[in-house]
Image (cartoon, rainbow, N blue to C red; front, side):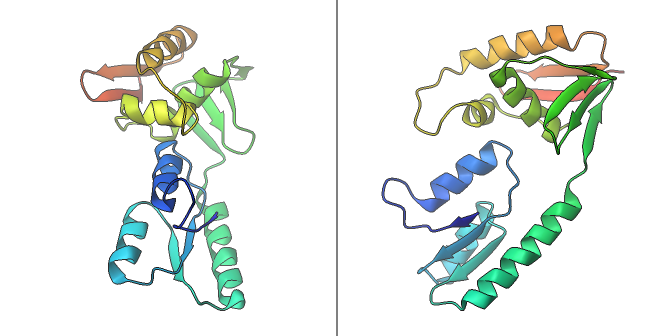
Length: 175
């Protein structure tokens, strides 16, 4: 993603935080007229992989894009597992052992976020941001419904979703 910080309705940093909040690890290069050190630090701390200030040479931008794409293809594990739960990052399909796991779109989005951050607490707010449009009205209580459904579908898989009151949810392998 080539991201300009000066967008008409939102700042580029808002968009970047939303993308990262969804668990999306696509390479992001900020391309902007703001060349200040503070601006570069804010952009990189918000989750950008690179920052290029205008004016710039097109050949340099192209080289940076190639470098980020090379690194992105090397760091993605093709299959992530938790117990019998498997997620193929290339096809974005879930399975329990060798059997496909049928999920509604929002259930899929929630489970993908949890699996991509396996062993890490994911807040309800981060899950909401990952399944709803940036501008839509959201109800955090809906997450509880999706978690309930996912727990039923994961029964017997040795993958469990743990509620950490006030903090969020954690996907881990059951002991």
